[in-house]
Image (tube, rainbow, N blue to C red; front, side):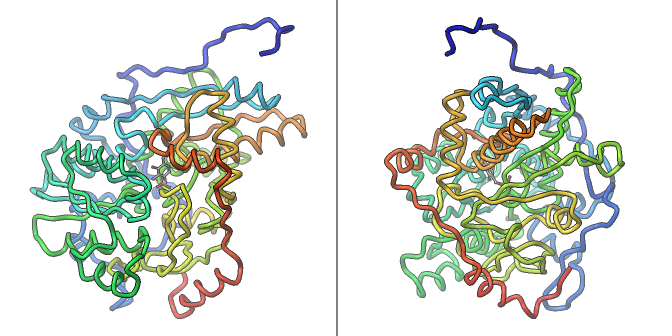
Length: 463
Ligand SMILES: *Cc1c(COP(=O)(O)O)cnc(C)c1O
């Protein structure tokens, strides 16, 4: 603390009352000048039909997946549960600004206040609700870091649905407490690859010590879901309906910023499959599309160990390892890619949301990649200034925020930076311990490795 300067306590938080919570989700597809291409059936080469998809997903969710309506009503039952932690705070990061000596004003939307500690319940609650409405009894899913699994477990618990979760083995071992949390909310958790599915058995035969991957766990969860009429599969990122549900984040943030007469010049989010990034940015991107805010920059941040947007190719590809999903038009590192065991488990995915991919291909958003040590440096800086321990995933956004704020200082530019703090890192202490003891390795995927991976997609259609 500087002794010579008088300290003035100013408010940091912008509140919304419960009555001001948005009542509709925003569907950006309506506003896109060019729509993303549809998913296609690999056997027929034709767009997948609703019937084909309805073996895997609830019908209402498929309707949302292909919907081109601009606004979709949030059901009262979903709002009721949102109100347990929403509206979430929008916070001015004054202490971080001071530490960086930047003219930039930095705001973050804090999604770590949800019961499971991230943005993921925003879609989990909606998905559980629609499945219940359609008479489904079991939801199966995969989880990487455990964030999605705990969000879905939480949601299923409210709607009296069984929840069966395949958890990537690397995370199952690194984060035993996430598993306990899922079990507290009544879920059944299995490390993946497992012996419970054909896919899992095949992988284990080839490599009994396989650390697993999201791609493999998705295959296991889908395999179980399609075996029973009362089972459906639930995905926590990537798909259009998931991004739709997450727009509550940006819609709230927009109202909060309006209250203090601010509008961002840069919006930053980390990307795994793209859902929290979409959630914070799409309601603002709408203004950019309408030419009102042409200069708004939107930045997606990913790990150098899994550089889907910055180094992947734009191609149709499978969403999972054993090719059970339709082909999706997206940036990808190839469905065989098993990302290195980095600590941001939620960002270890070979693909990217088709909408986010389309926006990137069209030059409407930017992307950047960082290594683990760069990320944890930023996380520590944030914990020491703003007090919150961020999830390693969220720390990717923080790294970029710090770099942009420092640039603003050097260029003496008045930037208004908004970012999504997608979750807290209270379950990530082993990662922080590794970092503090200097044991964290930087993994960067080389160009040769990427070429090798993406060469396998040579025969796949390009969007
Ligand atoms: C899952 C997760 C992510 C990555 O998923 P997206 O769909 O890209 O948002 C980011 N942050 C946290 C805290 C997560 O749990």
